[in-house]
Image (tube, rainbow, N blue to C red):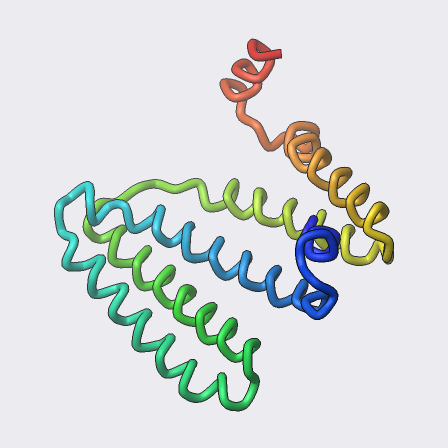
Length: 168
């Protein structure tokens, strides 16, 4: 949400167009970190070789993507190849991890978290604000709206509501 105005502040003007690339990299690494979370079952059950296999598969996907996509698409090719590798690692790792130690993840709730985040990002993008101040303000508004939308939208379970009420 704050990438473009921060790039204007932190980087020379030559990097002004790097915003979309940086945003894509943030999403790609969010996919990786979520996949790492799901693969924690390998460490819990001391079968780290399975985790190493998932990383090896991802490395091969990434290398292939780099070979074919970077020459044609440059930096975007690198982002797409890395994203493809992390998506494959996510899917294979989750499937393998669930076989090693099954966890009942609340996929619907996780999807709701993601949907609210994507929805607020879309609102941010279609706002059309071009100035740094405008982009910072809409970014701040979306950031503050995120927990509010989840809270008011009935996302929280009763015990979670009680914890929040006790905090405030």
